[in-house]
Amino acid sequence: MSGYLRRDFFKVDGNTSYFDGELFEFLLLTQSESGIHGGMAEIGVHHGRSFFILAKARLAHERALAIDVFEDDAMYHDPRGLGRGIRFKQNCERLKIVLTQDEVFAGLSTAIGPAEIRRRVGAVRFFSVDGGHRYDDVRHDLSLAADSLAPGGIIVADDFMNPQWPEVSLATVDWLKGPGNAMTPVLATPAKLYLCARRDKPVYQALLKRFFAGNSCVVRDTAMFSDEYYFARQSTRAKLQCLLKERIVSRLFGTASSRIGTQTNTVAEPTPLPEKRAA
Ligand SMILES: C[S@@+](CC[C@H](N)C(=O)[O-])C[C@H]1O[C@@H](n2cnc3c(N)ncnc32)[C@H](O)[C@@H]1O
Image 1: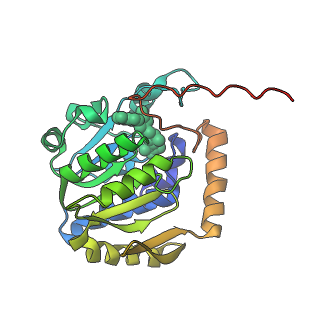
Image 2: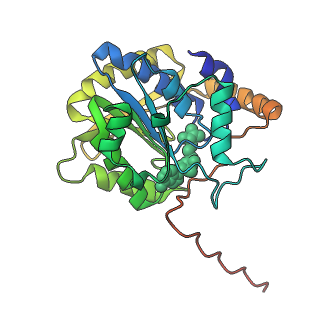
């Protein structure tokens, strides 16, 4: 486990769970053993919690692209008024993560195409999709990720089956069932769905078996239509240890998880519902 996961992960405000963090790191570090090479990218960076795992896993010739509007929005206001852009930069400095200009794209994910992503970081071997959570955003971002992917690459979609974000699940399933889509689920965690090309599934199944053997987790077989894949979650004991660590770090450093929103800036804020009248 890297120093970032051990020491700094919970000091960076964000939504990504420690369990997914461990999976990100394991897959990023083992892909090369299977001959899978390329850049990394994330749509939806916030303060950088999950993106820094990608950036820290870069080999000498590799680059990682951070795509975000980097602005506070209707669902997230920085408590100290600094905003997402400043917080991300501050965290990069604190964690000594040096990014080139090409590795940061400040704008909507609809404003960048696969050719530009490949120009900036090469074909992508690990693509985390955690930006706008509306139907159109999710479908767009998954297509963008698939079109930018290197052979053997993996896409990780956030908040699949999260009841707070129903459009994520609908868009992901519709996208997966679209004509000619070669991507298929290989793993679901309580928060994310991991997708790879059908032909690469045995490679990732083998890697995941190694991860499961070395980590305290509960694993089940599941399926979507006829596509079988793993469902895995942390063991209760490991989860409690994480929660405790997160609470302590949050008290000491004032960071917090699971409070940030994912409303895209492309849609208007919903009209508030009228208050109920007293009977
Ligand atoms: C849930 S946060 C990302 C959390 C982060 N991956 C983590 O590990 O904590 C969602 C981010 O997506 C960004 N975002 C939302 N819609 C976007 C869009 N259409 N294009 C680019 N970024 C977007 C927001 O600015 C926000 O920072």
